[in-house]
Amino acid sequence: MWKPRLNAVLGSLVVTFGFWLFWGELPLELAVAMALGIGAFLAWQGTTVAIVWAWATLLLGMESLAWPVVTMVRIRMASAEPTEQEMGTILTAVLFGLFSSIFWLTFSYGIFKRLGNLGQESRPE
Image 1: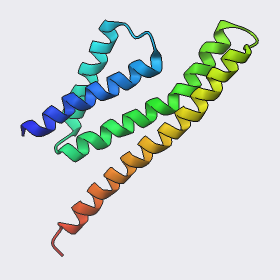
Image 2 (image 1 turned 180 degrees about the vertical axis):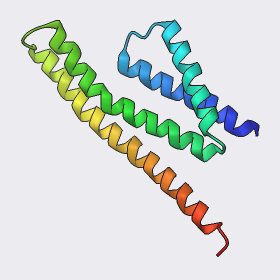
Image 3 (image 1 turned 90 degrees about the vertical axis):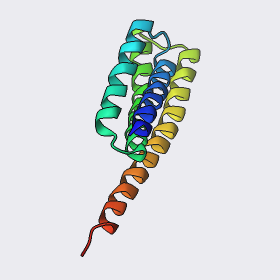
Image 4 (image 1 turned 45 degrees about the horizontal axis):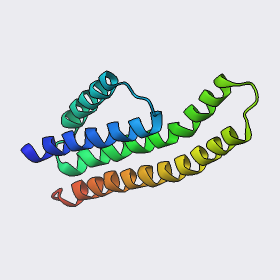
């Protein structure tokens, strides 16, 4: 029973670190609160190690999908017309954000689908 909880802690650290990378200047108190909240959610949902990482990769995919949107909003709020450097930042966020979100969401979908198929195979007919 300790393995899913240990993986929930590790998963919450990974998701919090990903959020910190995406957000940039995350205050320590908010990072700790996020790690505890995500860890509690993963421990609550995760009865197995696979379920914990399926949820963790789903959260990473949603973070990656939100990264380009947040970058565009930040730049738009900072100035009326973005500079060339800011346009490059937006392009980088869109390309890497979409690529990584597709990867993590597909990975999560695969884990959830595999868990669903395992549940169907183990049922007696």
